[in-house]
Amino acid sequence: MAGRREEKREDLKARLIEAARERIAKDGLTNLRARDITQDAGCALGGLYTVFTDLAELVIHVNSGTLKALEARLTLDETKDRPPTDRLRNLAQGYLNFAVEHRNLWKALFDHFPPESSPTPQWHLNEHLFLMDVIAEPLAELQPDMPPEDRAIRARTLFGAVHGVVSISLEGRFVGLPLERLLSPPFVRGERYGTRCSSIVLIEDTQLTFVEQSFGPNGLRLGRTRASFAIA
Image (cartoon, rainbow, N blue to C red):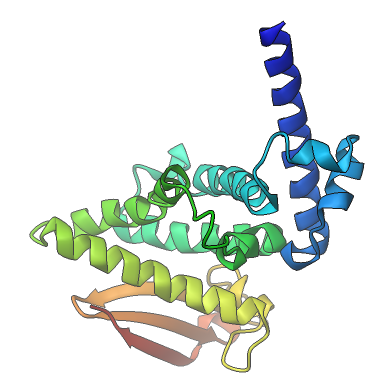
């Protein structure tokens, strides 16, 4: 009997997480309501609290699934043998694409603040570490003499720079980039027209630079826009 009860509890837990995930994806975290979730999951309102302490704990489990999906997007096997600078660009592009495709779920990762009475559990905090690890790995190849502690700080700074550009752009802030510019493909050079590409290039120990190169017909260089940020 105990095994049956646990099986039913795990089934209810999975249904509640999926219902909450779909609600967040559709309506955003701020519009999440316990009554809507339980209705979608096919259980009574009180059923949610037999599985989770509160709604905040349920959101943590949704965010856990989102982090796993993001990790799968950023750790593709086909990119492992590429040069470290290419892997850093792929990470930035993969992070942007995930944020665009799953905007509300992505935002929930950073907009959810559990109450002080039930702080974020350590297991969930640990799930975020891969975001730094996937950046630190190519950095170690680019700067092999850098101490691990400094490399960890550099990885956090790089993530913060990319996340900041993506975040303010998707929010439509006046300092952000239009979405079509963020998602532009690599250099396209035609006989009748040209376009540009935004790149992320680590050019010095203390500086991160975003470069946008514009092209005219036949690859004619029209100009370059550069924005640099100091990194610790």
